[in-house]
Length: 133
Image (cartoon, rainbow, N blue to C red):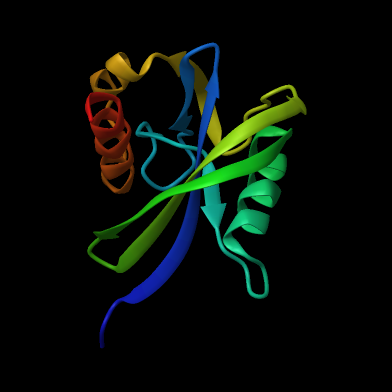
């Protein structure tokens, strides 16, 4: 049987030339790895609606989705993740961690120093390519 494909959203939140990075909490799958916050698409919602909902649930923030960046596909042993990344603008909220145990704001040049979840690495590569090109 082929693995299930799961649509997941990811937010690239930029504030003062730094990007929001979130570390998965010990009780979550892929604990200790860094990711761009977001979450799984639910039935009947758009990718943008999913991202707004997930950021409200996971970080207690309100955002506006500004633009689509890319979709990366990553195959894990038991599933395939289609990770849809968007640039978003933080509007308000306190960045309270639910699924994460740490938030860091890093310049783009320092993102590769963290141990990232494999599905998120193409987003970093995309952001770096945009600054070079």
